[in-house]
Length: 166
Ligand code: GDP
Ligand code: MG
Picture 1 (tube, rainbow, N blue to C red):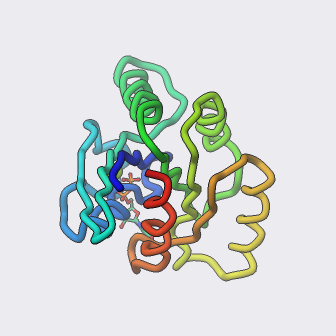
Picture 2: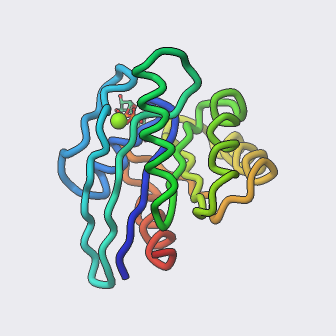
């Protein structure tokens, strides 16, 4: 199997970190400053059973100005022509706000969306379970996977989930 997967989500949720963790090498740029990823960076992950090609995208967020609009357009186009979308959110964030804006866009497309609740190293389990529950009521995700790009927790499950979708 082989196919394309785009990684989307608000700035700073950990997209580049997760991609680097999956690829096992530093390719995407990670930083505390939002929006350093201005181009779609392609990474290839080889598995015995297949190959996954990743697109790292700029964060989608509401905003004005040329650059903002350009980056949102880039992110949206990265979402329409792939086999699966990894939508990253932070376990420390509340549901809603900027994420609703993204889900609205994703809901218009045909591509299955895997929700990755990232940075689970930062929250207690009951909080995480409540978050999973409220996300599952909000959107028809292909799967919801708690993970931490930093510790590597859940990353294997992300790959196991994606592969059959390609
Ligand atoms: P991006 O803007 O979505 O690409 O986010 P980055 O990958 O650049 O990460 C933004 C910040 O969050 C960096 O300081 C990362 O070290 C941190 N970060 C990323 N993943 C995790 C995680 O799983 N746990 C924790 N605690 N921090 C993380
Ligand atoms: Mg990034």
